[in-house]
Image 1 (tube, rainbow, N blue to C red):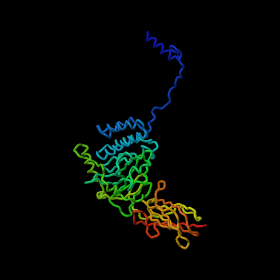
Image 2: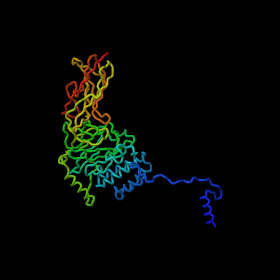
Image 3: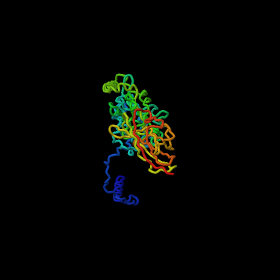
Image 4: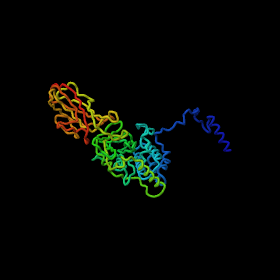
Length: 453
């Protein structure tokens, strides 16, 4: 009896009638045209894939604490909490790569998955994860010289970030990154508010002879203020050597010793006789056999350093011998006494046949009248250059994504014809030129103005 009543009621519902009381008619939906096979956004957080990625890189019980961090991270993707947990995972990924031989492809996939949950990776430039710079496998190959570290507030260590190959008795450092003297990772990264002052720094050798090393960061737009020292540790530091960063130019010189001579805090450990330890030993033997003779001495622990404010791809050492100076913004043809005048000079050199800017050059702007007598220029001086009363000076730095620009702001003290000379030589006849380097020659441009009351 009850069954018949239920069936009857169901039939009445389908007829849009009431079973006991009148129901509001419903609109009958037509066939859905929504596609259900749209592929997921490859840059979006995908929590469901992370457990398998974790176990692919962290074997056995070592995966358990990572999964706990993952659970907290995916509870609120893109949040500060997610980045806190994500940086902890990335730090563990890097530390494991320096202690054990690892599946670098599995590690790269895991890093990509974690990064997607830490940041809105759809905003990254270049596109994430399709661009080759987001293949983290070479950076996780510590035996081949890869480096993978977290740095900044509350994550990673305080020492240099280094890429090195195994050596006897010590690893041979190929390249590295460190804060300048007097600064810390936390201080130079503090301006990266979108990551709470933290970054992933990773890199790998592109070639070993000549030595070219690529460094990158996550987030990719991370900046260093006042800069980070990047070293190419090839065992030599000729007086004309400087660091060239592709797409930027030649970087201001600085000593590489704190990076090239610093020991690695974690190196490949292959103690024991299990399959993994034997594989690590074999990898060491192969790398040692393939390493160019130049790097055998390398690490006599020396090299050349340069100061970078962001990472724009590959770093290599280049000889810089000739530096033409040119006006990129000339002083006006007519100048009034007391008027503030601006000018811009660029220092360049040729790198592999391409004209590129040179940072770290002291450029002086000197004024003379029609008779060749000095005319005082009143303006600012850079503390890195010798200050001369009748000159203004500036230190070449990066403008946009190009190196080598020196900007001047000054006033003229005398009426009459004025010739403004841009030079690397101060009033004492000393060519300061590139700070910390020697052996460069410079060409000096002139500009003519008429100074009126």
